[in-house]
Amino acid sequence: MTDAKKQDIKLATATFPDKDQLQTASNAEMGWASDAMAEMLRRLDLRYIALTPGASYRGLHDSMVNYLGNRDPQMLVCLHEEHAVAIAQGYAKVTEKPMGVALHSNVGLMHATMAIFNAWCSRAPVFMLGATGPGDAEERRPWIDWIHTSKDQGALIRHYTKWDDEPRSVGATLEAMMRAHQIAATEPRGPTYVCLDVALQESKLDDPVTFPDPARHKPGRPAAPSADAVEEAARLLVNAKKPMILMGRVSRSQEDWDARVELAEALGALVLTDMKTAASFPTDHPLHAFEPRFRPSAATTAATKEADVVLSLDWMDLKGHFAQTLGKGVQVDAKVIQCSLDEYLHNGWNMDYFGLPACDLKILASPNELIRPLTEAVRRLRGTKEKAPAKWPVRQAQALPKPRAEGMMGLKDLALVMRDFTESREVTMAGFSLGWPSDTVSFKGPLDYVGFDGGGGVGSGPANAIGTALALKGSGRLCVGVVGDGDFCMGGSALWTAAHMGIPVLLVIANNRVYYNDVAHQELMAKKRGRPVENKFVGQEMNDPPVDLVGLARAQGVAGEGPFETAADLAAALLRGEKAVREGRPYVIEALIDVGAPGEANRGHTAGRRE
Image (cartoon, rainbow, N blue to C red; front, top):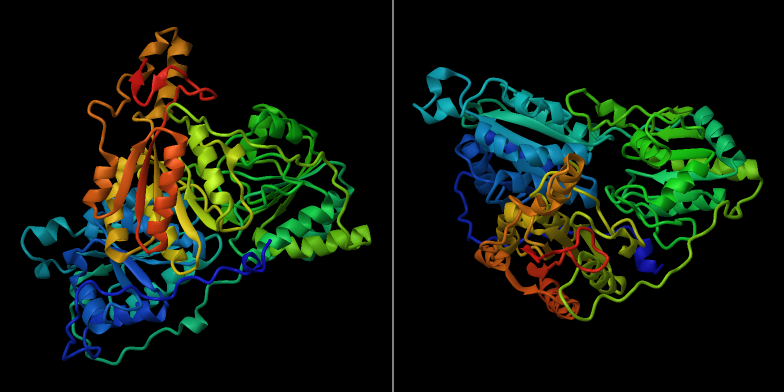
């Protein structure tokens, strides 16, 4: 690993140039309630706030422009509220810090709900401000203020946010903003929401304002494990014949990454990682014996059956992993150590807490706080700081095949082209399309891949990638996202924000012209019910006419090219796309995918055309 890679990434701090020349206000001193709210945003060190303009927070909008000068935070105008939240989620995937979002009344909040749910499921900190019409009915404008005023607006998203409030005074609003930021940024992280009364925003300040001091309201330090828990975990792991570590939701810090490697090497433990979460361990390390998975493979299943002690570091769906590898309802004979804070978020509305796993040692702490003391305890019990001999067969380097030289690419061919492209560059993968062949990925550092969207919906990919690229701007890393055609159709207008603000991101669209995940489900239903499997594509295709995906990108002001059918054409396009992104511009490439290519499942369907 190079010295540069050993350093935590220096995140972008420069603001973007304004597209419109600001006129200096003659009365820019703090005089309105919304000025105080804007000042609080600045004191919270929020560099950006993504928004779709709305009258319910027109007071705050004016203050961000004419009081703050559109600086700290700077506004990122979006074409849809869902994109605003998804950009903030992508930003948080890199920084692990909240970015600001403003949502217009009840209707804007309803637009944003899918993205809020994604942020919740991925445990991403997002700081959201909403607004509602005047609480005092006498102050509401006819019609519009009535339909845009809701009682308890936060109830729309309370089941999948950490905290919300609807304060009724300036002092209460500033405190609520401080609390929302603090709660969002405290592990386990997640989105928070503060709803502002439009009449309060537009009221004059009659008295001096006292601001809560961010230095005295920092996020809580992550919970650390007890000494007894560390010692017991170390004894179990040192005495194990086949220790296994499940690397789950852990930090983006390079120092924490290195500490995780040291722990695995001190134990000689087998390490498994998951494609649903961000990069957590070097995939080419000898102890990382198998590629990261969306679901367990035959090899990871066999290994799990052999393990006698399993250390779960906030592994997503631990019980599900055992059910898929050992069998549903089969008792787990291995000793299980579970380190996680996640249950502090579980509220019973959604089942993102998954099944209840059996644990022999449950440590309610941040995994990042456990690693170092556990490594020290392991070394003390072993009586050496030397690496332990591997207790498992180690990873054997295997040459990857070359993509097909002729014919339309399958998804594996696309993945091989992407692997070749990323291997020689410092690239952050902002996401992969569904079904990505995980044996082609190579993660050497914590920012090589920032994980799945969380909620499993469709449409977040483009905006997530833009948010990730925003956080990486100026770092020297190339931000690349691979999205499906359905994902791009739903979320592609997010690219306008990238074009408008000059956010450099390279999006590759894996286009099979069909909602292919559901094709697999329809095939399953047909087989189960003894019905014609050939009908699995009916009601699934986006091919008559095909959607002009690059045209959609160009309509947002983003350059792009394609569709390309061959691996060679895609490889050449990636170089052109890289040049554009290095120059500070977003770029889109469309690749046609043959789901009937050799090595692909469900053969006999080519880019939306039945053979």
